[in-house]
Image 1 (cartoon, rainbow, N blue to C red):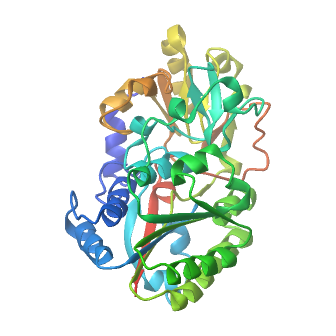
Image 2 (cartoon, helix red, strand yellow):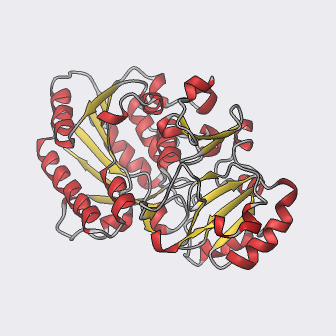
Amino acid sequence: MDNIEILYKDFVLGKLVSPLDKEINQISLSKVLQNFVDQTNTDLSGELKKISTKILEKQHLIFFLADGFGMNFLNKLSKKKFLVDNFWNVGCSVFPSSTGPNLLSLATGKMPGEHGDLGWETYISKISDNATLFKWERSKDKEILSNLGLNLDDIYLEEPFIKKNNIDYLAFVPENLKSSPTTNWITNGKIFPYDDLSNALSSSIDRINNCKERTFTFIYWPDIDFYAHKTGANSSETIGKVNLLDDYVYNYHKMLPKDTAFILTSDHGHLDAQEKRIKLSNYDELFQKIRQPISGEQRFAFLRLEEERESFYEIFKNEFSDHFYLFDSKEICEKGFIGENINEIVFSRIGDSLILSKDEFSFDFSKSYNNLDGLFSDHGGLTSDEMDIPIIFYNT
C-alpha cells in the first residue's frame, strides 16, 4: 500500500485539499445552524463565532444548498454579481466530496465515518451488497432497501440535529425527492415539495411573513450538479445554471423579510473527467483480483482485496501510480479523514483498500447497471475543484 505521508506532501504542495485543515467546513457550518436552532453560541471561534453571533440576532434563518456549486463556479461569475458581492468565505467539503456524505454531515454535525454515508454507492453488510442511499435502493437492481429488511436506523448511524428541537422548520426540496426516505430522514419529514425554484422561494417568503415565531428554512436546489454531470462543468448549460442561481438569489434577497439571515453554500464542486476516465475492466489481471462489489464512486473507491492485496498493489502501482493512490482503508481511518470517532459498522463499509485520485483522472468501474458514458463531470475526491465551496452570507 502507499504510505499516507505522500498524501500530506500533496496537501502541503497545494495539489490536494485536506478535509481536516480548514476551520470552515460542513461540520462547523452545521454547528452554526445548530446554534441558531438551540439559541446558543458555543464550540465556535474566529470568523465562525462572528457569523454565528450575527445570525443569532435574527428571528429567521434561511439555509440554501446549491448542489455542486463549488468555488470554481463562483469564480466564473463577474465581480458585479450578487453572489460574488456577498461572498463571505471559502468552506470545505468532508471526504468523500459527494452529496450524501456532505448532506448528512450538515444535518448531523458528524463526519462520514460517524454517520455512515460513504458516497453514491455504500456497501451495506446486512445485504452483502452496495446501496444507492440517496435513492434508497440496492444499486444493482433498484430493489427498495425497505423490501430487503433495512430500516433508516440500519443505514444512518447519527440522527439529524433538527429532530431534537421544536423550532418551526421546513425544507423545500424538488418534487421528485419528496418521498425519498433519505430526504425525509435529513429533514425530519418536514418537507415542502416544489416543481420550480421560483415557487419555492416565494413560498418560503410567505411562510416567514405568516409566522410569528422563529423559523429555520432549508432550500435544496440540484440543478447545477445535474447539468455538470450531464453536460460538463464548463458547458454553457452548466454556466447558464450558475448565472440563473445568481439571478434567483438577487431577486430573492430584495423580498426577504426583516430580521432574516441568509446563508448559501454547497456540498461539493465539480471536475470534468469524461476524457480522463479509465475503464478498470480493460485491465483484466487487476479486475479479477477484486472481491466484488466495489463501492464508492469514480474519484474514490473502497475495495475488498483480502489475500490479493499485495499482488493487486504491485500491478496497480505500475499501471496507475501517476494518477491514483492505493491506501489501506484503516490507515485513512486512523488519520481521521472520515472522522475521529468512527462507528464500528463503518469499518464493514470501507473494505480493506481505498483508491483515491491524485488529479483529474477518474475510474470507470464498468458496472452493467451504472453506465458512465453520459457522465461528463465527477466529484468525490480531494482536488480544490471538488472540495472548495463558497459561503454566501446576507442578512436584513
